[in-house]
Image (cartoon, rainbow, N blue to C red; front, side, top):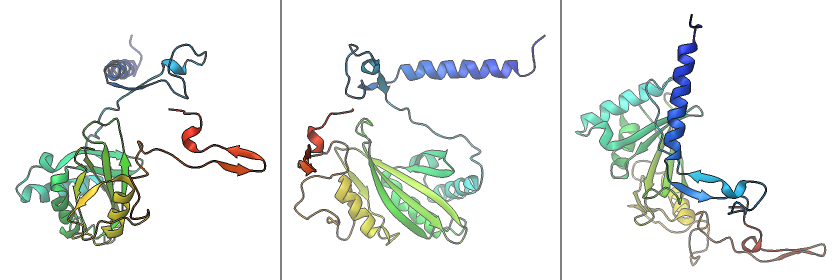
Length: 242
């Protein structure tokens, strides 16, 4: 006689085994860790392989008010003559947040729909932040927009990606004027070019600064620091841990 729940446990174990096998087939983006890159060390870190993270998406239902947002946004996008898949790459629900990954060519239209549709009413963009994923080929640079509906007390994140070779994303200043300085800061630190921004200049670093210092491929640099008789070397001369 089969114990109650044993079939479900076996199905879950099989699904986990399949997922693990598929994960092992992903591209290796880094070998070794903590400064070790061979199998000669006793820690075993030299043989560690970090594989490319697969693109994830959350299935419906999302829970909370997230389904209401998805339904209203989908209806609005289709009313404009687009399919949802044309504008939204994927949706992720994690850590109590709803994130829509928007294709950059449709970002302005999606943002305007989120602001103007009474069923959505995301009147405020709280900020724009940048991220850099060097191993994410063709989508190394990401801009993240944090939206707030004051009317409905709801929050939503929009994430847009662009390749290093073409780091352009449309500006949202015309839709959300609060993006002005935030887009300048993201350009300053990550090098994302916001097309249509009224004055895309540096805001933190000096005007003649070379490069974008929060990118992961930016050299650390620095100068030695003397403190109580000891000299601390600059970051680029210290031991590497990656």
